[in-house]
Length: 370
Ligand SMILES: O=C(O)c1ccc[n+]([C@@H]2O[C@H](COP(=O)([O-])O)[C@@H](O)[C@H]2O)c1
Ligand SMILES: Cc1cc2nc[nH]c2cc1C
Image (cartoon, rainbow, N blue to C red; front, side):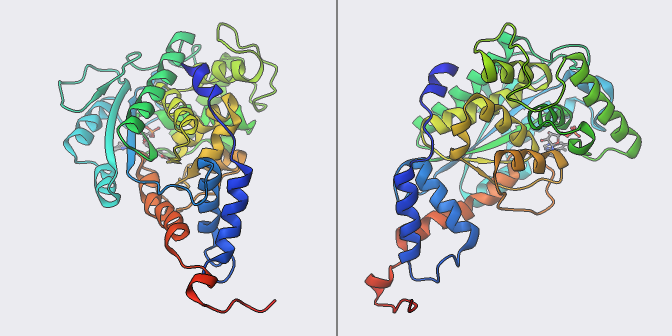
């Protein structure tokens, strides 16, 4: 399923990109006056392969929940049970993600891809549990080859189902206590940056815990023989995993220091891209997952929009590496998809301009003399 999804991904269509740019310049506004929003609309045209692109609505948020063995190393101030408790909160409609989703009219799908507890029978939960959390990445790979593939496929299936149900925009969401540590490790591996520059305070750790967190990330890279010199191109063998060269290395890195939700989000991104449905990325967890998706299928990023920039330093590093510009920068550090949800109305507005704004010709407005 992963290979088939990757094979279906096409890069941005150059004709649609050119048509969208030309169309922007005919609309009744000074050229370039919508700034980054013009780029967003053009990007979506390239991704869809048609100009103007379809309106990116209805939107569907998927929150992938999972736990992390590295939590045992004291990298988060919160107990692991908060993951399962927040899953219940999402299902009850009580989280910030639910409020923001209601604001932009997005559906909310909650997916258990690896929570370290059995969830009470709750209506609406999508059960795709691959494992009861990952193993501690400072003792060896966080996931087996099978686990990482199953988690990727879980994300693919969720995206396909949402699209089959009518979604025309996907928004990534995550929940997993300690997942900013795994995110930092992934960002370090894929960007080649030093762990100290890409590790943040997550839910809010004190100085002492922060120092430990950086050391834990270093240890995980060392134990898993991931030198952090950037991927693809580290020359690491993708032992036991399908694919040779860069994709095999990416899968090995994802299995070694990623989380089940990172893998699922990577699959979700790939499946959105394969179906030419735009994906709005949330914070550092999505950024880390997008680095893995990019290593597996570089063209998948043409179908992504960076919803926001989180406070986590690894997020900016990931976005820089991917060449993505975040739309919202409000010092958020919540996750759940909240930053992606806030950006959704902006992405819709950018595309709506292409459909509804009059041209200089049609409105009889005089163009600026050349
Ligand atoms: O999205 C972000 O950039 C982000 C930044 C900091 C924290 N989080 C959320 O907080 C949790 C992880 O934080 P921590 O400190 O336990 O690693 C997890 O549930 C994430 O959704 C998310
Ligand atoms: C309360 C709480 C809510 C969250 N939502 C996403 N990550 C979270 C972490 C905590 C601790």
